[in-house]
Length: 144
Image (cartoon, rainbow, N blue to C red):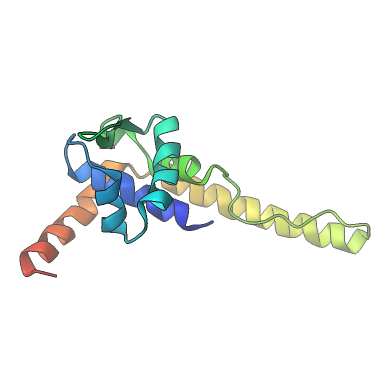
């Protein structure tokens, strides 16, 4: 797993808080602390997966394509990362011992991945927003 999932979560979380207003990639990138180029790479994937709608041009920006309650975090993961596999798989080897160990390791990884993906599927962007927005609002009020 790389930073793309964190960027994807940040994008959908930020857009959920804007209640359908368009947000520029420059603002999203600044709020994450990365360059617009890096953020746009993930934003394009979210757009291609129809999680986000993007309007180009000077008055353009992005917003969620569906209500936050209808987007789950697994969709964001699969879209942002473009690869469901979290762990690199043990390669098949020429030796029986390698294949036995590899089979065990790969089965363990697959089970862990399935658990994570099922957990992500059970959490909507609205759930995430309900958890983090009060904390963000408190931080903003305190000037943090």
